[in-house]
Picture 1 (cartoon, rainbow, N blue to C red):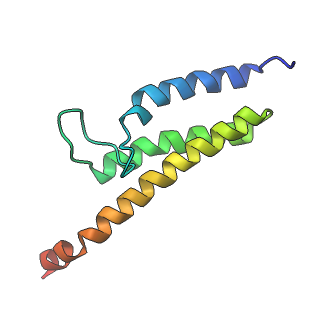
Picture 2 (cartoon, rainbow, N blue to C red; picture 1 turned 90 degrees about the horizontal axis):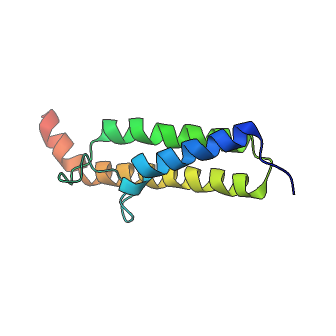
Length: 104
């Protein structure tokens, strides 16, 4: 059995941090991150900035993937990003009529 590289150990620490601070707050249905536990609204800017950390971690796992678990973790993180982006797109598409009314 191969020992874990220093970079792999550090990535695992970052993954735990991202899981606790960001991904635990991701809505399982919409994929969006609410502004707080009391407030159920999701802000586009906050969601984009938050999910960039997840995307960056996924890219780091993909770059340093020397084990199957690392490849699986990279895929899982990337799918969390895709889920959030799809949720944002769906919300924006549902609000097109409001935006059009605002423009005129």
